[in-house]
Length: 254
Length: 65
Image (cartoon, rainbow over all chains, first blue to last red; front, side, top):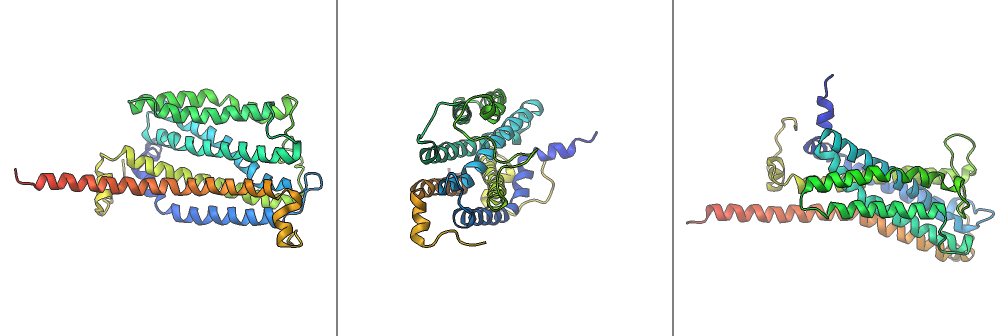
């Protein structure tokens, strides 16, 4: 089997040059969707009968919560690919995903807490969903800490990848926590299988925000990874050419 | 599709839930603006620093012994 395409995907230079043209489009698309979804969710979606207007926090809370978990899987898969195939780019993606995932968990914990006050009468409760989600936030922090804890880049990458892989056990726990334990948190509103419990007039802006945040995540992951590539590849000729402003050579990146 | 509030004031206060809703959105936007700008600024400062370094290397190579 020809694995050349796979190793090309793992080339930092190939990634850097390929994504160069994507960034402006992703910025326009992500910010366009997020701003549309925000205006829709805040002003045009109907009020919820039980939670009144406080439910509008859902439009930022739920999409970011989905993505913060998807981001963890992506980080762990990148770490596994780096460990198995000893490729450089997946480790750079893994390192770049950690601060983004951490920022997303801060958003989810903070907006959840703010939403909890008018809805449940409390800012925080040590129940299954919230505690397991707090652990996710700590796992991201752990990866960031490990990345800075070693002199050797290789050791830092391997240690982070192992922690990322071990931590994946927490994701199904977060997902199922609302079914397994007593919790203040409502059960899933959107279901892949079965009937969703949300009206379409509320669903469309939510869907816009979910797509918007996924595109946004793709954008920032590319941006963080591109910066990381330059840092790690600063001794290579193609980065030196880029810094000096020399025209790039046309031959395929290896 | 119709605007759900009777006035700007009603939109801001949201029947008493306004501070919670607005605080959440402001926080989200601060974080996502930071996430967009920080890698772009980091890249810019890295390129600037490396350019300076390259210039210093060139100057030291050209300097008379």
